[in-house]
Length: 147
Image (tube, rainbow, N blue to C red; front, side):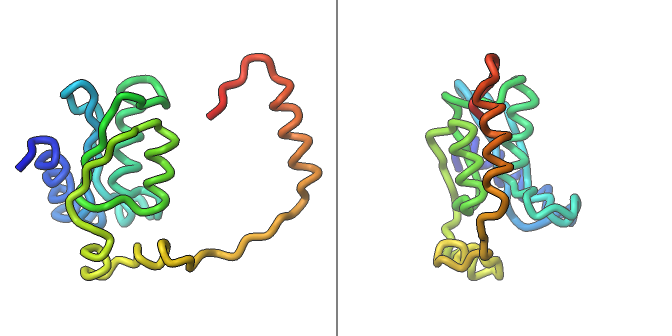
């Protein structure tokens, strides 16, 4: 087994054996060194955003002091869900290695597949004008960061 995927699998085992959440572990690697680790903590944290990938990205960002993880690779026990894919993209991680597929995840009772099939929460625009004022103030700031 690849050593980084083994580290991700070990994270997943730690998580499930501790009752933190599902079998999802992850590591972020830069230049051959693990800079972030995480596993699913949805149950532990009572937070549906605490997926393994998100936790590993948060750890890597803390450890590097940066929100930009360009040049990093991510190893995870399962194909990332849309939320995690978004986080991976925002972190500028360009290469992801995963173990199990979305179908594998579905077979053990997780509902990832529905997020790929268009079943989403209904959203609607509200008070755009007021929000555009905030955007305008931000756009006028001199020392802004675009993240």
